[in-house]
Amino acid sequence: MIFEVLTKDPKTRARRGRLQTAHGVVETPVFMPVGTQATVKSMTGDQLHALNVEILLCNAYHLLLRPGHETIRQLGGLHRFMAWDRPILTDSGGYQVFSLSSLRDLDEDGVRFQSHLDGSTHFLSPEKAIDVQSSLGSDIMMVLDDCLAYPASRFETEKSMHRSLVWAERCKEHWEIRGQTGEFPIFKTKELESENREFTRLTPNFPPALFGIVQGGIYHDLRRESAVRLGAMDFPGYAIGGLAVGEPKPLMYEIINQVEPHLLAAKPRYLMGVGTPADLAEAIALGVDMFDCVMPTRHARNGWLFTKYGHIVIKHAKYKDDPDPVDSTCSCMVCRKYSRAYLRHLFIANEILSSVLNTIHNLHFYLDTMSRIRQFIELHHFDEFLAEVRKAGFTPS
Image (cartoon, rainbow, N blue to C red):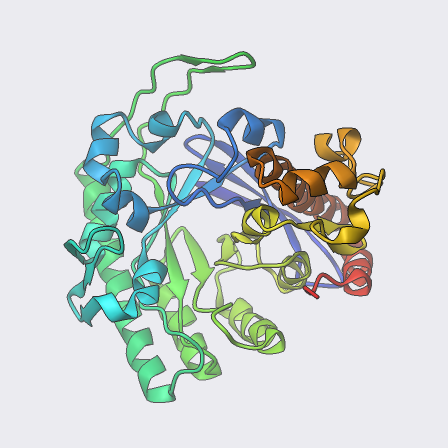
């Protein structure tokens, strides 16, 4: 993986960069749609291509349980399995295990947990997390970390942070050994044809990148220690984890502001699981390059649509006879073709097409927002965009 910072905004810490992976180039700042189980819900790969999605996030925890990472490896890796020829980042599963607190037993060696699907028992160690993601053939892997909910005591947070550092070091060592011994599988993807494209890319013979994850809760000194010690391990990239887990938004921004100066400037920075368009803009102003969140897709399925001027809840009766598009300034195919009245009808009728069209619109909105952000950074006027976003507001009502 190669990352370069192309330009910086002079009035904020915003950066315009480029990330080159085995499966293509990613322009940053970037938003990664979440394809938890090797699919972005209600979307086909061709639809994601049409939206110009450059990179997807998939989740190793869910794929470990179903259909199984070994099954995916035998079928040629995740790219071939889901017919996706662009980059994929896989989360290690640490957050999912955290969310299963009643079904897990965690110690220094790793975490033993019960499947939320069938109750079967599994053990995930740092080394196993690397092996699973290797079998998937992802372009960017994440270390296994210990994530805490908010609020957590300083004692609990410090213990968790130190455990995450030990696990990160073990992940890095195992990742390096696999790379030195050539144990990362090389997946050759047979040609897949569709109406619009041919999928013929071959994965080059070099290992996937591995990102460390900064933990430490809301405690500035713990966050600083985590960032500095991870920096000494020299990961190809760094993530800020353990945010958007219940803490107030101002506190989240404060933590990002405190952590960023301690992250290596030449490496990409990834804020995990965040967030609203306003969150993205605020974090980019603080120097973050990469994001993922289920919000645009999950909200779409619930009829909650983003616009340049805020949001609309399409099920509301006031849209029953509304001939206007969701957003008259939006260039997505949904806003070009369909009225609010039609989208409301689909939602009220519980039609599958409702999820499809709503998701196309929301993902377009997020991706177009990131494209505009990149342009504003290039022009050194990102502060103007930030003021525009703060004025609009995107808080659910």
